[in-house]
Amino acid sequence: MGYAKYNEDISDRWVDDTRDREEAFFRQWQVDHVPTPPLPAGEVCLEIKGRRLEDEEVFPAGSSVKAKCVVRDGSAPIELFVIRAGKRALIRPDATGIYTIQGSDAKSIEIDAISGAYHKYHILHFVESAHIDRIEGLAEAISSFTANPPGWTREQFEAFRGQLHQLLAKNSVPQSFADGLVEYFLGVQLEAAGNPAYRDRLEAAFVLLRKFAPFSDLAALIAEYFRYRTNTFSKATSESGRHKRPLSGITEFFAGKSGIPKPGNEQSRGVELIVPEVEFCCFEAIRAMSRGEAETALGLVAVSRKLKGNLDDPQREERLRLIEARAFASGGQSKKAYSVYQLLLFSPCAPFQDEARQYLRP
Image (cartoon, rainbow, N blue to C red; front, side):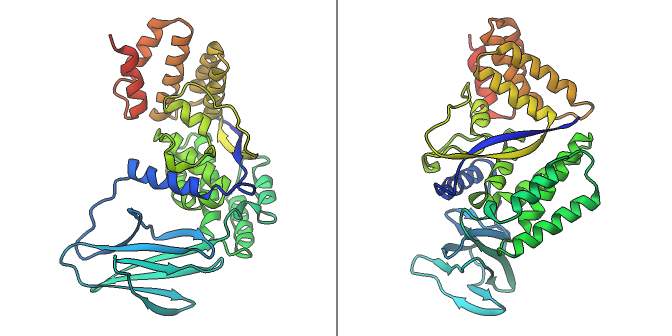
């Protein structure tokens, strides 16, 4: 299995601030796909608009964070401290129980939420909006690393990580951004080598980079690519704004729309992503379907299956089946389409299952 370079046109956040689009989508995606577990007895956590904060969060520089402390009934009273440059300051809630945490200019602070003997720590990073992708030297470092991807060595990965850390440190961006990129590229290499451990690396990249999605097109693209790979498709909400999201044409195809949306009037720029050839074939099959070239799409599906080698991916196979079913149906091969849709009747992906039911309905 080899690599391919996929180019995605993304609304240029240098022209239009797309931060709200990512924040709204991530919040809704969490609600749809990541149910919040019950809070253990005695513990305390912080929530923003119903979303539980992770250990590390990223916000725009200079903004304020409004959070609510959540504990189980009967727990000890809550105290919330903000730690800046080693100095602790107690903050108090307003009448509705909301704590306002004043941000800083491109710096990090620590939060210590206390309930009795239990402490919950959060690190809040404040970064310049629409800034990370524009850091001088960052695009060049990534392009140099991905210029000839096959055969990356441990030494090359560590040198790349170190180079990114230096660039990010000069601009007060958390090093976890660099760690997320390294995890992603390592995952691509493992998958191309037929190593199933790529799944853990891809998930680690998603966990690290999703919080940077409002501030980096590349982070947003990788986060959306993970959602695509796990078949967790979500349609746009009214909060998502007028801008197209990364991979919107691909994900909308699988969420129930049949073609690639035509470009709008908004300004965009290309963002390059290294992907395995098997996935690139899947992308190209969708583009073929949007052009009405069902036979070409079927050929690309066959190539993708051939390239996978011994590395099985049930979620990819379901995506290929959906492309195949639509191609057969559009080409008048109803019996073949019927047979493929039958395989999708019990798919864990709700949009796939719904489409199969509709097609097979008497």
